[in-house]
Length: 261
Image (cartoon, rainbow, N blue to C red; front, side, top):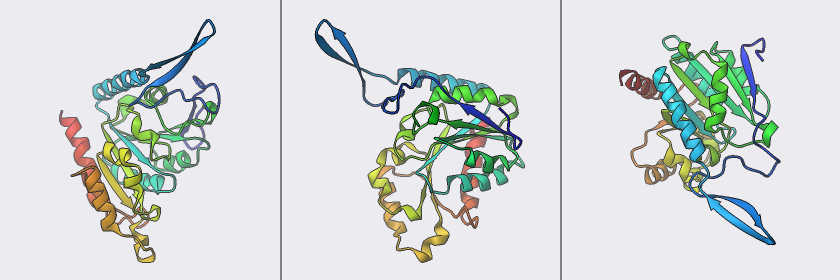
């Protein structure tokens, strides 16, 4: 369905059997299937994300064939992810054809805001199948049907707000970025190390609020350096635009590097 603001609404309805089932289990462990044999209940443990990995590989091949750079943007709720992407799109779109896939449990609030940029936007809502807290590769594949891939240079995926699950699922992206706001505290990298270990860059957002907070920037940077040595960290304010020059330069270089491959 195409709304008047050019937001394509995609709702997935497959594969979920209730609020406590999880169709895409942890990629680094195993799922547990229950089978009955006579009067005995047998637990069968198996690796369960091979299907996601295969789908992600298929997505990646498609993106490579179409020469589309894909950026997976992750964060906790309230980090300023959508505001950051709006400002990023405003700088990228004069020279690059961009599109966005937005993941949320409910509503099209973020998609509506991003569609104002003029970029085509596909909304994925997960409430219909239990409110999944991440986007998986097969959902991305389905969402691509709402986009003209021959008219896209950069695809940005705004993942569902969560510092755990999204980091576990390969969707076929080229790069992963995590946004952390100074209002969240210095302890988040230490508490959620997988997210910061799996990402290629970090944006420390809302630095315009630092004069009003007791926040130790160096403590955050030191924590990130221990978890992911050498990962670039860009200190930005999505509100004022401070720090965006370095962030946009990094992103442009990554896009250019893929085009040259």
